[in-house]
Length: 222
Ligand SMILES: *[C@@H]1O[C@H](CO)[C@@H](O)[C@H](O)[C@H]1NC(C)=O
Ligand SMILES: *[C@@H]1O[C@H](CO)[C@@H](O)[C@H](O)[C@H]1NC(C)=O
Ligand SMILES: *[C@@H]1O[C@H](CO)[C@@H](O)[C@H](O)[C@H]1NC(C)=O
Ligand SMILES: *[C@@H]1O[C@H](CO)[C@@H](O)[C@H](O)[C@H]1NC(C)=O
Image (tube, rainbow, N blue to C red; front, side):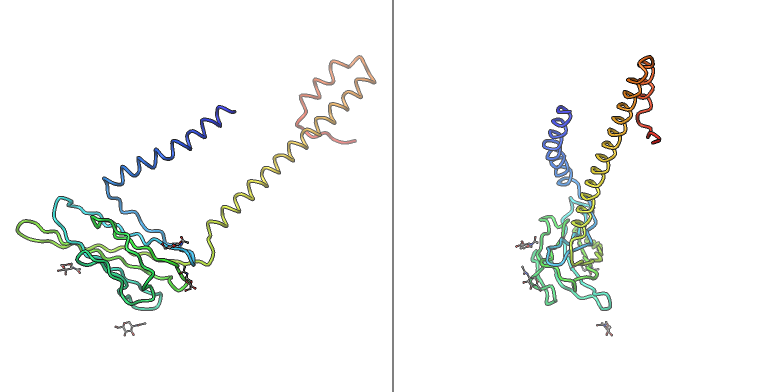
């Protein structure tokens, strides 16, 4: 048991960082268009993830980014843009709370929305316009990412983790109780068998072994 625990601990302590290192290694060389999370918590910071991978990395490209916000019953409006190498926040309810965290190669053009409020719920649209400059001509590509943000007042994950912890304790208590009942049944059966053996010494060998075999089965009380 000790050896198993030690092995498990070693796997967690050394395996996890190694795995993360491998993932980082993979991520830095290969672009993956990971979808953004859509659930935010009031008062927390939310990453609005937008990744637009380049198909032709060897070609010189100019990337412009526009972030729009569209409330549930309204028109979309520009809230942030990245133009000619400069991030710019526009006048909107989000002004002062948006932070550009895009990568240098502009494959990752994500934002952080600070201090999320309930009224931030709605659709965020990330529009990436990339102009590829070939020797004789240029070619534009655009991509769209939509994030339907849902803001909740409390952290839902906390609740589920607490619930699973409670379930674990209930299960543990249940198992302990079951084991205890089993032990009590066995003890009573054996002591009963011993009473019988004391009365009839001739059956001494036969009864206890028979009783031991039937131990897990509850005894019918007379
Ligand atoms: C949100 O971001 C701000 C600024 O970076 C930081 O000071 C604050 O601690 C963050 N809040 C949470 C809940 O992570
Ligand atoms: C949305 O835009 C249309 C056309 O520009 C306009 O008529 C309408 O009033 C706008 N709606 C809202 C909620 O701003
Ligand atoms: C977050 O927003 C609320 C309501 O808009 C405000 O009262 C609070 O001071 C803000 N917190 C931070 C850390 O900016
Ligand atoms: C993308 O950018 C190029 C160059 O600035 C522009 O000509 C083109 O119209 C843009 N495309 C879209 C869909 O905005």
